Length: 475
Image (cartoon, rainbow, N blue to C red; front, side, top):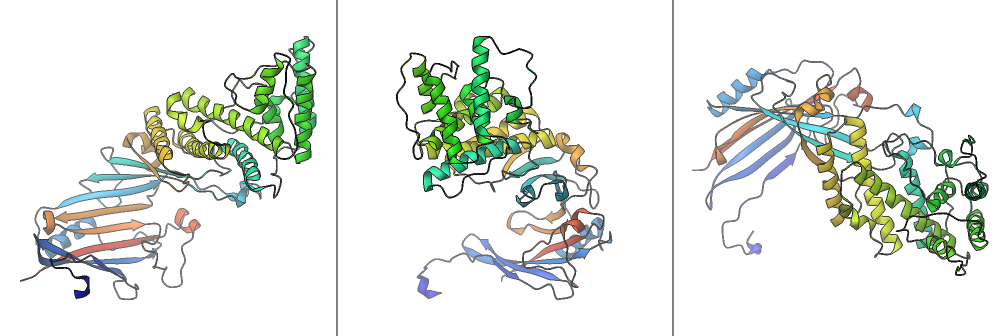
């Protein structure tokens, strides 16, 4: 390639050829890479990867001792290193029949698996010993109705809808999950607060049908509802779940502002609240309130502000309360020095951290020290990167911590590598069993297809991959 004008001996890149598995050995890849001695090309290493499958029985054609003997004979080796690798998934398959039609349209992208590596494999499909090195990988997208924090995600989605309306204009009013009248709920909230101040509200008031706690809704989550909700947060909970139109939102805020102006609302709010409505409440303490217009986008911005304040405190309560992070660790996500759109974006990133951490706590009962490591990894990632729900986070764990999840199930991947030689002369033979095709271009043979029920069900179909290499020395 003289046109490149390279005067020194350039290293040849590896060459891989994708093959149709139509030959007797069902070859799917052929590879070659150069071997160098200093600047000199001394030889070439050739790779062959074959695949047999899908197979629906346990006849895997060759045993571990046969693999070792084949490697010895092929490479004239005496000292062998035998290492094992296994991957197990930790999420149970859940029937979509248990979900509503609306929920079943949401992708169930939750993926938690552990990789185990160990030396001294004793037999094919050996269960990883407790001495194995274990690496947990977590990849969870927000929004699954199976998630432990599904309800807070719905609250976040409403918040995101408000931000989108303010950014691009009203296209469609966001659908609220509740069925009650937001105006009537706000009226009741104001009346209850006034009755409480006047000493008229009974401490044994058992009207849970319209009680604020019932309005908030029961959450199937470890992300528990805070017990220190102030007036604005209670107002948010009543409105976001039930407001059906922009006109209804205007009526809700008109009721609140009128009550403030007439001195009929005397309530407390968190000191660090930054919303316009919180400023009006603080002004009402001194009997002087500025005039606020409820025309145009003002009501939606007011609602977005109190929702942001509320959800920020929710996340602080969770991460700090469970001792997974210090308040200072969350300053990036809590900052008010950026505009509302950026604040919403940062809260969305922090919610993804919540999805990952809370689901790991709920599904595999991760120990506290592992949860701290995982939380910090996610927080540090999102301080530097945009939202990416396909990002896979990894953390090393003790094998004993997850042994109950893998000892009685089949691995998604099980592999043994037999190697010999040192440095550039190192060669290896690999045998692998997997529940999915090992290459994108490979399709099940004989017109057979391998769907999820066959992978996870009783048919136990698998692909068997055999990889070997050889070296050719140049004279």
